[in-house]
Amino acid sequence: MDVMERIKQQVESNPIVIFMKGTPQMPQCGFSSRAAQALKAAGAEFAHVNVLEDPEIFQNLPRYANWPTFPQVYIKGELIGGCDITLELYQSGELQKMVAAVKQA
Image (cartoon, rainbow, N blue to C red):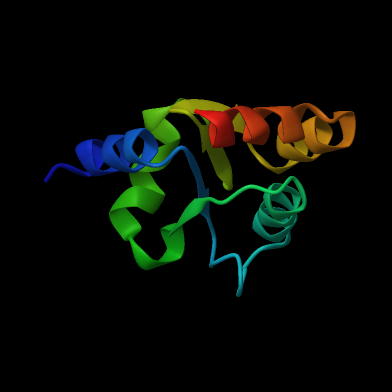
């Protein structure tokens, strides 16, 4: 399967997914750690993809959504953003609303 198709499949088959360096339990980057913590604090159940374990995804994910950095958080197939945006959404209460909407769907 083409790498862009694999990325698309992850984004579309998981209501919430984070492409991050490491895992939520063992993050390999402070930004990835903070974004995963914000998702957890918002009550999200989410999938994760460790981009360090898949060089093809690491190289091509920035092209997929035209977003150059990691982590990348997707909710219902839409790129929400990286660490800063995820934290801002959490602090404003918007992330919690987005997570609640996923749970109700």
